[in-house]
Image: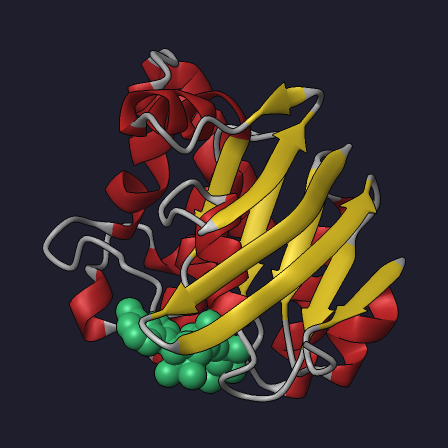
Amino acid sequence: MLKIENLYKSYGKKRVLSAFSMGTDQMTAIVGKSGSGKTTLLHILAGLLKPDSGVIAFHDTAYNFRSFGDLANMRYRYIGVVPQEYCLVNEASVFDNMAYPLKLHGVQKQETKKRVLELAEMLEIEDLLTAKPKKLSSGQCQRIAIARAMAHKPPLLLADEPTSALDAETKQTVIRAFTEYEGLVVLATHDTDAISAAQNVVSLDAQ
Ligand SMILES: Nc1ncnc2c1ncn2[C@@H]1O[C@H](COP(=O)(O)OP(=O)(O)OP(=O)(O)O)[C@@H](O)[C@H]1O
Ligand SMILES: [Mg+2]
């Protein structure tokens, strides 16, 4: 269960989130027009950005925004992120990009290989494992970023417009991967198919 209570966030004089609250334990789509604060909210949920005030808890563990160490620990234990800009390591292979979170969690090589292959097949990127992201298309990079975020099976998966670079058919493959994902998925999206796949839809437009 993810609970957000009374969240406020401004950049200087610009208020982005105002008394925002929500609670969910099912796949949730955060919607809203460009500039409405979707990425801001996901960055806060990822523990990468401090709100001005408010309380967030995942599985009854409250985020401690006073400590970057605590936030990093929270991220390590619970959270996977698909950034809007993918943020892949361009010089490393696709396999290594996907394996990186597993390495951080001390997963053995054989198990890592198995998980990477399983995700690569699911997201239809198995032919790209030895390639480097700098030579790949946006839609390919987007799926690698999704696979990387899912690799260590984090119980909270945050994805920022994860279907924005995909054709209609590949989009369905990705949406299926999210709906079948075992943890709680929160995604920011404009995509009507992704919105329909979510059990909860939360709009930031009324802020
Ligand atoms: N680091 C920052 N400093 C100042 N203003 C910012 C910063 N990041 C975002 N903003 C502003 O906050 C508002 C919300 O931005 P955000 O990126 O969260 O929107 P978004 O809903 O994700 O938009 P998009 O759909 O275009 O990705 C925008 O008006 C943006 O200009
Ligand atoms: Mg955004």
